[in-house]
Image 1 (spheres, rainbow, N blue to C red):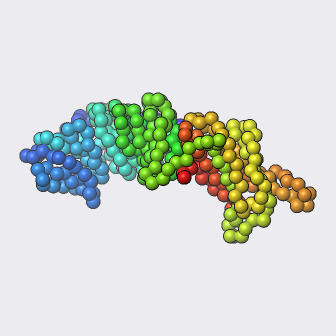
Image 2 (cartoon, helix red, strand yellow):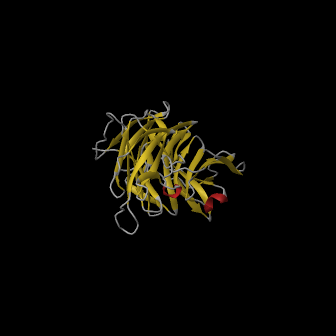
Image 3 (cartoon, rainbow, N blue to C red):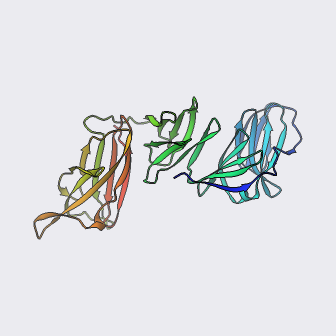
Length: 329
């Protein structure tokens, strides 16, 4: 899943080779506002035009902008107010940068819409690209990335360690604690990943309370919802297979009503869930396996400890929509 590619050599660069006039006052903070980097010094605000991103690292503020038609990285010393510009490769001009960090003489630039994370050495060297990245943070100069896992879920990866996360919607990486605990949040729910232990250690919500497992930690629900808005009159049930083994089946009933099944699986790991649709053949007065075009795809689902995961299927007559989520009270 992780792919790296070298883009362009940077051997001609030296760090911040174009100094600008220094200010007389120290900067206290810097932020992006309406395409400008707004820096506050001694209570007064000073703008730097045409900026795309800002970041803070050590004793400097950094900003990414277009200067004389080419991309540059600017720095502002927080103590002396000295400003410098470092020209960046012209190839970056065609990118859409959405987040940046600077650490250990490297610029880390997340670009869209493809989701490439670029590591740009500031003292010469090659640009390295990590593809298919949704978000990133740095741990001791090593990027920890949030990315799709290829089966509808998401994982956090860092230094060869991959940790699945339960949050299935659009999420972002936030605070890093003790250079090992990474907070992942979708705005409502937050998951804490311990990258050194290689696992998710806690999942909580600001507004809701998660259900904890009792006799089961997995629920399966399926129902028909035809595109034309009619109520399906088919009589059906689903057989459920987990990791290739038959686990059980839902009750029999009208397809427009929810068919449910619960099961206990080993937590803290992925499981492959496959549901098999069976329909009543009215002429034969018996249930038969539905043809393949009416069967849902198998789902690779991660089950965190102390949480109940739900897999919901809705069939519109042509295809299934699938929702996976932890359950709340």
